[in-house]
Structure formats: C-alpha cells, structure tokens
Length: 188
Ligand code: NI
Image (cartoon, rainbow, N blue to C red; front, top):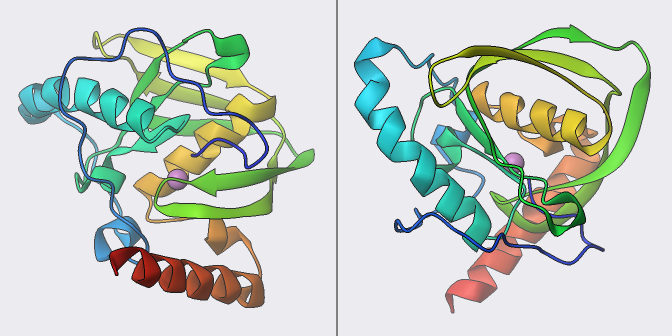
C-alpha cells in the first residue's frame, strides 16, 4: 500500500542495507495470480526476501508490500505504517484473516503497483490476522484503522486482488486507463 495522497512519505532512519527490487506495475499477470504458502523448503528464499522487500517498500516509499509485487509468488507481506514517524516493521508469512468485523470503514488507498492512483475503498473496520513472523513464531494480531486496511490490502495481493478490484468496473477502468497513460508518458 502506498502512502495516502495527502500525507508526506516517511522513511525510517535505518533501512536494510540490501538492494531494492523492481516493483511490478498493474496490469501484470503475476499481480493477478494467487501466491502459494511459504513452506520449510522456502526458508532460505524468505530469509533473503524479507530485508529486500523492506528496502523496496521504504525506497518507494510505501507502508506495505506483498511478495507478488516484486515478482515472488509466495505468501509474504511486509508492513511499516511509520505512524508518528516511528518505524514499526511487521513481517507476515502466510497471513490469514480469521475474523472480520461486520462494521465497514471507507478510506483512501493507493498501491505501489498502481503509482499515483488513489481511490476510496470500503472494507471491514477491524480484522484479526493469524500469521508466522520472521523468526518462525505463530502470531495473531487484531487491527483497526489504517493497519486493518493495510493488512487487508496486502493479503488481497496474495490472492491476486488489487484495491481497484473493490471498485465499480467504471471506476476501475478509469484508473487503469489513467495509469496506462501515465506509465507510457513516463517511458518516453
Ligand atoms: Ni498494493
């Protein structure tokens, strides 16, 4: 997820000293594919991937990034809301939403895979997410507000869902056309 359009991007004082990865831009087939759970055979891949995902997210800058956005089809998410300019990095391996509020909340979202595009998205106000952390420990987090939206946005990425998929076809088409046009202009 990218910073909201009206907030200044923040970057933590210490960024992992590894190269950032290229971020895939929509429409890209990998962004539409379902990622697979990371298993014991992926331990080395995931260990190398996590700092590079953080470096990529901070460089962008963004507040959340899912592995498919850097072309890796594994269920791995990194988040750092940088609330009050304080870094609170969160690594989620194989995250699952195990409970979602019936109360809904609408907030503006953006996405590093749709640079410069923002829209209001309505989602459950609160969610409970079960996941494995970077040390391999099983954890559970209950979130509301921005963290709730960010968790849902990033977990959507693992299922090939982008924030524009929550909008009407009309709104989605407008954003995708605008993005395509802006990306073509950028290439020139
Ligand atoms: Ni995103």
